[in-house]
Length: 274
Image (cartoon, rainbow, N blue to C red; front, side, top):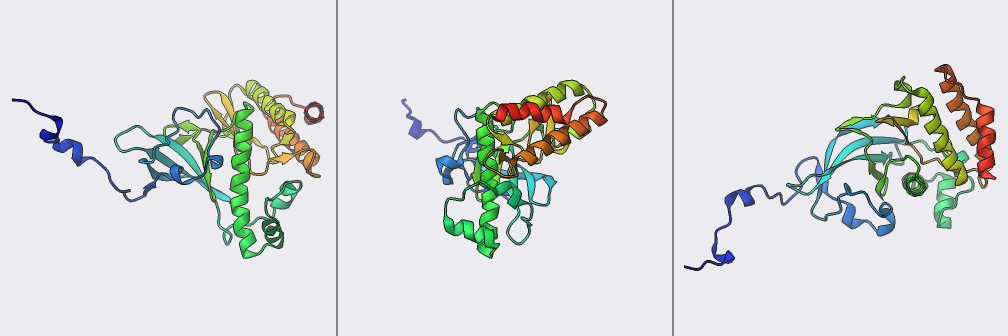
């Protein structure tokens, strides 16, 4: 007797575990709905999930802040291994204060003049645009620095006020901040200085660099929190912000009894910029 595949019954177990709709604390992956320019640079890491059949599952809060909160999100197709990512979500217009933004945004251009005026006037529309503006600014900074070889999380995508990026840590535990690390500090200082040189060669300063936005994962320094990255030349505050970065780094390492001269570091970085 001959059988064809269509004549054979499907195993019940194959159908029992097929998930057709998102469960609680899940959504459909937002990857298919965003335009290519809002996706991370190619070639993408192998762990990035691009399937339209994937779900995004909320796993909890990593940290809360004045301007944004960071959550853990796993993106996976049902029955397949997924990727755990950090979802940085900037606060909405009625929950966030943009008082510090002006010193970082000088020299930047907003594509539409209407948006520029609204942001400057701090209207309701302008504050909503500003939240998106900062998420896109951080995404663009991460893309640029990743392509330059800087130690930053891989930027997966940006969608409105939400930025999805590589989660730096083990399992669901975030990597420690530099302030929590006490071993191999001379090597870590060398890595931080190398990072600052990469930024300076591209004409940038972090703008708010400190041991609190430097993570240490498996002996490697990774810089985070980059929405305020500044162009040292076009921003009139650029030199001051670069000098502040140098002072913050040198002060902390000096307190840990690792020699670092802020003025010498600043002079070296200026040589990279010009």
